[in-house]
Image (cartoon, rainbow, N blue to C red; front, side, top):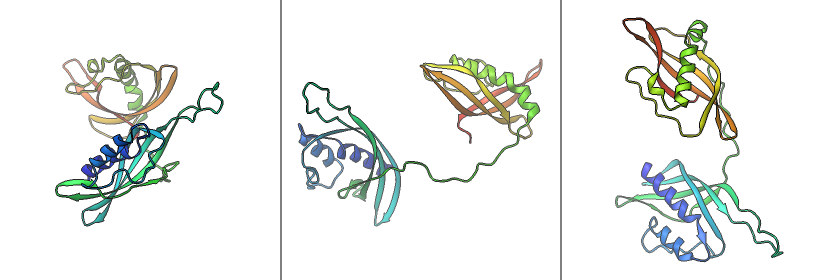
Length: 240
């Protein structure tokens, strides 16, 4: 399945990239992923210009007999039309998402595109989902570990999370340019034992923008000769 996705994404990149100044480049690129002898110039009138910025493979639908259809979501860049008045600037380039469904076949140990694909729409929104299960909060432990989590995110923002994580934990540093604005909320799930999980809502500044992010933070209780304390063992983005 992964091989089919990779081939379909590469094919989509080549298929939706064209330049009337160099039409042979597109034909040569398509030939890599189509059966030998296929006319790779067919289906395009050799006019216009368009480039692909990103090709993201998605669902693979098995069709039987080693055939499948792969959906690829593609971000294309279309140059703006020249202005009729030469004294005016051309229209700005347009970026847009398009879907491409690519037919593929597994033959002779390779995935090949068996024919012309079809451009399809990209959903404007996700499907309806049921309400997420609400997890009760351990109010007492949330209050006890508030400072632990605030300290962790403060050091995390500085690239020094290792100094405040549990022994053996490894939290990769954030990308450069993120500044901590504050912890919006921290709630530990109800539970028992020395390993607990909670949800932190954190606000970051990236340039002029501010983003609110949600993290699942796994805590572990670490004991030493002096005392016991909670430390961060793992960090994951998202609610679940």
